[in-house]
Image (tube, rainbow, N blue to C red; front, side, top):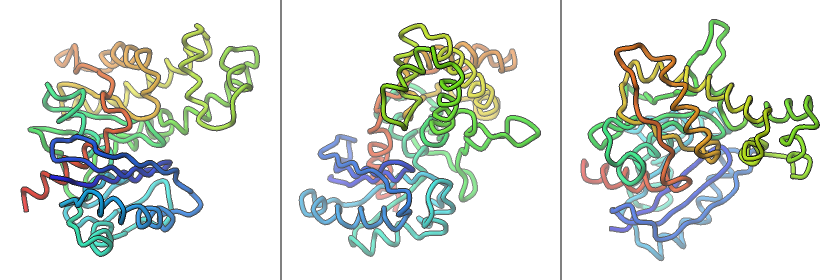
Length: 308
């Protein structure tokens, strides 16, 4: 069975063709013009879909959307990153464009499904997925299916409060927040390896330089990583106390820091867990990387078709 998958995020748009087994046949990726908002993304989708549909003859479309949605109605609840999506009937719009059944869920939920069925979470249940991208999101898969609360229920991990002043996890651990932290610290410590790396590179996505700086043993990079992961461990401890996943799969752009991030999170998380829950869930890096949402969207489309 051929299917299409769409990932709509704050910085990227991905359209994939694939199969019901989660195999990828074709990938297409587009940058998101934030100024154009939701209308701009919809124009990009409209332009790309006809050729993909003609080539692959898909039976359904699965969508991972970067924000809270109602998976039953296919309507976007709210956009935290881009204008033009609030209360938008996304699957109705796609069905009108294509005459093909379309199903939508939150992108972190969909990525969780992809990792649980085809990635790093295959041998575990329940699987908690946390994405450290332009924002911070989460999804839980249990029994091979996405866990939903009452609509538009999502695991909005990024909006967990970390103190009485209302600081949310996303303000400490998202890619954008770490970018800003790297900028500030590099300006304050111009002789650091991290600052030198930033001066040699174009502006934007400053957090990506942490990996090289860490490899050079840069203390500033180590401090930023340690403090970022400490906040992440605190936030995830609340999720563990309530949902008790067997494994935590970490994905998103910031997860490309790799083993230094995974090891630090695995070390810090138990500090915030009650003794009865120790040693806590395993912590692993996402296996599907940037394919996680599209592969999950293929699986979502299959499951929703079968349950109709």
